[in-house]
Length: 352
Image (tube, rainbow, N blue to C red; front, side, top):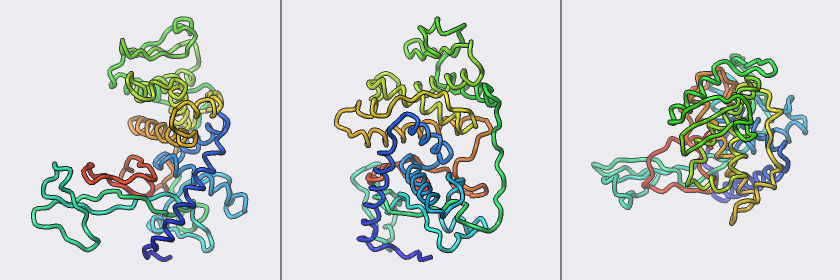
């Protein structure tokens, strides 16, 4: 497989193709059920950006329809060389799934606190004496990943899979979420029933720094509500942009709860997401496609951060077991370029 740099015109053509695929996949998210399916998929690949999970989903479904892969859902995805490090190889003739990866450059300065002092180094240029060097993302490039079903070789170890009865909460999830709520400075309590919450299942009061959850439901419903309220704490404090769009705020909180539940093997059939057009048109100066992409990424980042703090048994995050790599960096827009004065980030293809 060639590792030579792609000519600029080829790269730009592939980026245009990627954006077209991305818009097409976003436009399929019409109903609340389709949004839920996208989130359940994203929960299984939560180390990757929402945009890249949609691209993987869309391309794998096409591969399945064409008979190129045996299962309708991918299991683990990784790059060509990453599969090789695990003792596996891509099967001849299998086409990879194209996703966004960062394009980085090196910047140097002798005065790192001066934002205007950073200069971009040429490919082989060395820094001057006394300068420090940092890598920055300056754009994006196309990259490829393959599902495990497109490879053969050394067997992968099996990860534990949560197995829950109906209405049962995953062991430790309530306590883990409750600890995070308290760490955020909120007091958590349960109430007898929904009448004490004006018909709601849970309430977050930013004024009194209190979270209340109804107690007259099964354990799974209680933990779902607590995850929903924690999402409000993390995303919708007074004064934030999201706080001014209540419809989107409720979609985000329920979506975070769904991703947390899905990562723990919970039944998500009773999670309620309204028709996408009812909230995707709520933001002025943005298209519904932009709102869906931005909402999906905010949800993914928030859910992933919470999941990272939980001491619970969770399903896989999309990377093959045994793949040793750094913690993925936060998502950056597929069209954004980092300015030199930003703090350094470790960016990899799988983090976009």
